[in-house]
Each structure stands twice: as C-alpha cells, then as structure tokens.
Image (cartoon, rainbow, N blue to C red; front, top):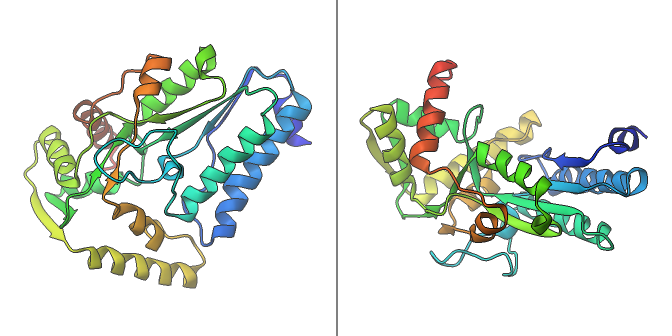
Length: 270
C-alpha cells in the first residue's frame, strides 16, 4: 500500500536503490529483484500512465568483455557474480512487466567514482598515501563519474528515444589500475610507489573477508565474488548508444578524478 501511494501521482520513478554487497545469493535477489519487481508492479497498478520508469542497473549485469573490443548491449549477458545475476534478473522483470508499454529505461553504469563514494575512495586514499597497488597482470576497466549517471537519468526522462532502451554508461577510455593511480597521483601532486600484487593476494583478502563476514553476519566490502569481478581481464562496454541517443558527453577520468580528489580533501575524507 505504501508503494502504491508513493507512485500514484508522479510523472517518473527513478529506482537507484539496491544491495551491492550481501551474504548470499538469496539476499541479493531479495534486495535487487524482489523489491524492484514489487515497485514496478505498484507503478502498473497505481499509475499505469507513468511517463518513465528508470532503473539503475550495473555493468555487472552485462558481464566482462572477451577482449579490449567494447562489449555491445546486444551481446549475450554473462554476469560473473551473484550481484550481476540479480541485476540482470531485475532488468528482465522490468522488461516483462512493462512489455505492453515499454515506458522504462535501464542504465548500466561501469564502476562509479565521485564525491561521497566510499568504495573506490579506498584507492584514492592509498594513492594519497603514496601507494599504488595493482594486479601483476594488466587488466582494463572503464569508470564513470557519478554526475554523468545523474545527467543520464535527467536526459532519459525527456528523451523519446530512450523508452524501452538499455544504455551502458562509462567514459570511453579503458585503463589499467596502474594508469588510474598515475592520473589520480598527478591531480593530487603526489608521488606513488607501485605495488604489483599477485592474484593470490586478492583471493586471500576475499577469503579472509568472507570468513569474518560469516562470523559477524555483516556483508564484506571485499569478498570472493568481488575479487572474481576485479580479476576479469576486461570490463569494457560500448557507450556509443548513450552518447548518441542522449547526447551525453562523459567526463574524462583526468577531470573527474581531480574533482573527486579535491572533494575528499575539502570534506576531510583524506
């Protein structure tokens, strides 16, 4: 009843809540699939003329690419984690429920950074302390500045082209973690000491976190599934549809990391 009342007289719903860490697949599906489904059902029941339902999904739903060639949205999704599976299933529920009237837009951001972020902040904090950890193997990832996601939401609300569409959101350029550290360090005016780490170190960190999560019954920030995602060779997607349909220019890592680092300094995160 509460959901029905919330959505009854609105023009649009932007669903950006979700669980990015959980102790089990069931917990991911409860937060990311079941609640999304209930919210969509409320919209269709209480506000069938809603102009747009925007769902913030994740690149994890698409899965990693096989090479440095960007993975396109029409390729078969291949999530490698329960989080990715739950996001993909939530997308499928939205498509199924809105099938007669595709008044939805699905946005799949890459790894998100920016002011207030507390996950990639850990990497900024290490660089601030002159440390630049990285896997021994060069792995390429794309990042997206948080305000670009907000812009994509706003543009999707007004774009007829975005109805019934899914978009991947990220800066076009892919980087390895050594290059990301160099860019942050340049903006921070810090020297860094590269710390190449074998994959085993990341796996040990994941196993240790999983062990403590079972004892504390609190989801770990870094667990084995997150490590599995991190150690994929390529997380590269095609952002051209978002740039074309939404006329969305993405902020470069050079500019976005400068804004983010300065925000962390000014707000005493660092």
